[in-house]
Amino acid sequence: MKNTLKLTLLATVLCLHIPAHADTASHQAAAEELLKVMKVENMYEPLFSQYKTMFTSQLTQYAKDPATKAKVEKHVTQITSILQSELTWSAIKKDFVNIYMKHYNENELKEMTKFYQTPVGQKTINIMPTISKESMQIAQERAKKLTPQIQKISMDLIKSLNTEKK
Image (cartoon, rainbow, N blue to C red; front, side):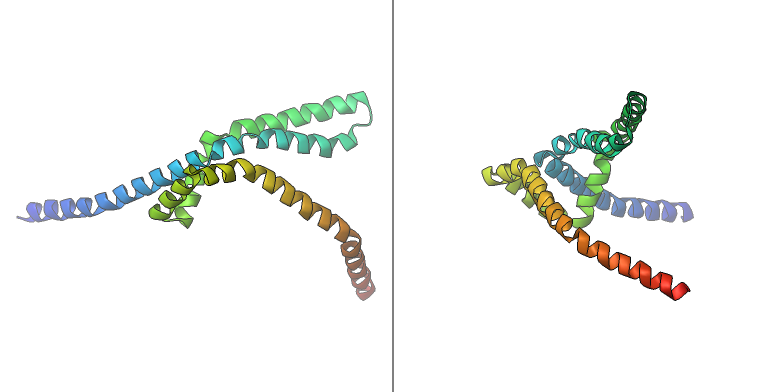
């Protein structure tokens, strides 16, 4: 009798867990489908060349002679290699799925997928990198204009702090 009660209780707990797991699985599938329709993998891959360009431009200022330039290029190649091996889409896809699952319920993910399958949704996906790039350029241009003002405020603070120390 005691064993029957334990088995019944165990079966009940397992049955209660199955719908939750099924909900999670379908929620996960909805997130994966959205990422697929949004072509996130295709948008993610060009980041490697952007990282390489960024590292190269940042480090070339130290390349005053051919020997130093060779060292910088080797360093950039090593960094790029690490990024390419550790930040692959297959390595981070689950993290992206979890983020979408955290912020959107299953129904919302399905609605978004429907939108991104429409012509306007596909246009949005295709044009988004351009819009992001242009937006970043605007922000950088505005920040560049503010740099002298920000530097002055920072220098005033440093002077003030140095005066207080004396």
